[in-house]
Amino acid sequence: MRPAYRFTLPVCLLASTFTAAHAQFPTWFQQAELASTIGAVSISGNEALFGEDDLGAYVFAKNGGEWTQQAELTEPNGSADGFGTSVAISGNIAAVGAPVKTVNGNRLQGAVYIFVKKIIPLTQGCPRWED
Image (cartoon, rainbow, N blue to C red; front, side):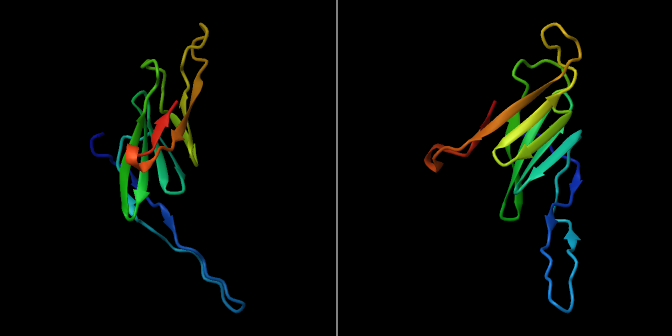
């Protein structure tokens, strides 16, 4: 498990109620504080993906009112290529950027790693993220 994170993140939007006579506007409120030395963040539904330059990317999931770390996504070769500088998550797919990765001898070309959450039966544990 990663050490404590330092990042404040308002993550919930209350639904608006509209009537013919009067419309109410949505109200934002802070639901949780997830803290880190974060370089990037992306949210999809009840999952958040945090990226830390050269350290990795971390998937957190909200269950009830609790946010817990679900996975640590790492650069397969372990090189210092900026992995985690940029992140995106949508459903069961996560993308993690490594902007200074050398590709086929081309320095600083960069790469994006795609991870897919593998859903397994509950009897075998939690869902896993794989590249």
